[in-house]
Length: 397
Image (cartoon, rainbow, N blue to C red):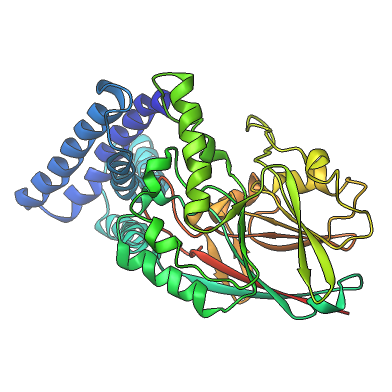
């Protein structure tokens, strides 16, 4: 990220100058000019200091996230209207070439540009104020031929990507916890990314998440952020100690952490296998997970549920596994915290990176459910892709 900051700042300056021309066209009020430039100059200076000039690890992660959020609020609207202003400039230039008269900007074009810019501007603000704790319950019923009769009607609540280091509102988090408990599911499964980087991020939130209730138990796996790979440590020993502590935190909130292993879930004399692998991601993501190790004691004829943080693991490893995995639960994508979900239609830019990015997928009788995430990371909010609580009901067909 640090290497990209100079490019982002250059883009920001160019967008600022260009967008300012539209403002100049519509008003001569000096106070508006001052507000426009003062906001961006102060913000850019803070961003430069926090990301480039300060010592690594000295800028609080939450402050960095808020700075990035305000940068997006400033930059995204200007980038979106850039093509409109550019097209007008090209038409003005063409007119100058043909008539030798260089016309002024048209007020109506600048008005359209400002109206369009206002949509993402206020949308990003809403995402930070109302969107980040606008939890939505997604309910799915899945039918299986080989589900033991004792588990007919069994309910699972899936959570993923809590990212506790991003939270600032206890009231908002408590709202989500209460909604989870209101589902009264038999079991709660958490598919990774409890923190952004450090186990200490959970200190404030242990009393909240320890209140989650499920009569048949609570189980979890690790996500890519849980290993501390994305922050600077004074030593490898410190990093290792952080991971040890994070594993303890799972126990502190009442979750059984599965590390490339499986457990038997028993009910009325019958059982299913619950499998949990460590993080395995495509491309440059670490591949700590081993499905082979996790399933070595699992029978082929057992009904199996797999928790695997990264959905890319499903196509890369799970589908080809000889031991038929009936249902895989994943997270990781957050739905990019931005997109559209209306009337059965869903879209987010993240779909171009992850073919399975939100909701239910099926291949040859094997299901994958990708949770949109409970928390948020980077941008301190959500737009269109709201934080998710998944409730899955298993049915015997």
